[in-house]
Image 1: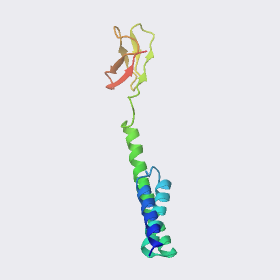
Image 2: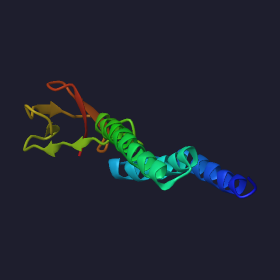
Image 3: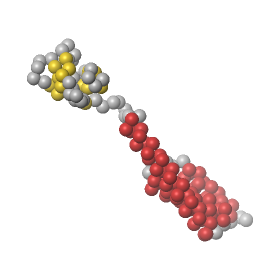
Image 4: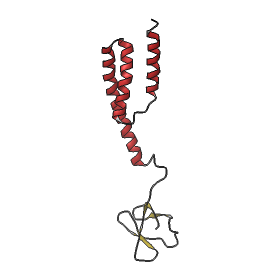
Length: 133
């Protein structure tokens, strides 16, 4: 009984530490899940077979959760949630003084007379913002 208490405390501390680590990719999630599952299986089954079964189940669950986390993070980057500030395209100067060509389709000619260079301008054709060159 005295030997199992320190092992249980060590396993519990390891499990607590691993539960706070992030699963950014399916591989990291599978690794974290396998370790956590092996610890739980080893404690519950008190043998190597229990640890192996726990590792397999934990790896599968961790891989699935890692894939979900990865997909949600990618969607956040695509939608601009993680951008510190939005990135705008820069218009192209045209051959006409005071007009620029929008960087967005249909690449309309936009009147920027009286707008300082570097200012944000809304393209009336696409309703998107660009930078005045």
